[in-house]
Image (cartoon, rainbow over all chains, first blue to last red; front, side, top):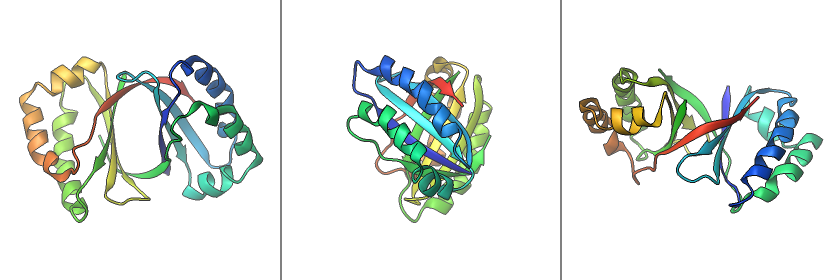
Length: 98
Length: 98
């Protein structure tokens, strides 16, 4: 299991529209092969910052599978115009839980 | 429910010692009032970067409760010397799941 991690700096004032479009976009990503689950969270200290965590079965399911799909073009068209600057995506693997 | 989020830049070469001390430190935080759960994850792209996600019942359980406790001094002594630069902690609240 791989965790995709990205902090999303949404353009201030566009939070409500972003959340509405994310509600549509999440159905697109949830249908991707290897998708396990996601959480979108909003920052308490800076209200235009969001945290997106997506669990994938493998790194390839995200990087080659989803990113190489037609569905990703829909995802991008719905969401990418909300971000400034454009965020960096990283992947993590669990070391410890409690 | 509140998610504490912090990306930990561990000093390169100290990852193994950090993980061993984290295994001790997690017992300290897990005993704190309002602690719900945690995950420590390691970055695939940059192996000295870690992601710590801690769920708390309330923001106060983390910021006043845990941070104001003697247990936090033990946590700090075990872990804080591994980080450079010192990381920024933020808190998030869930907006959407799938």
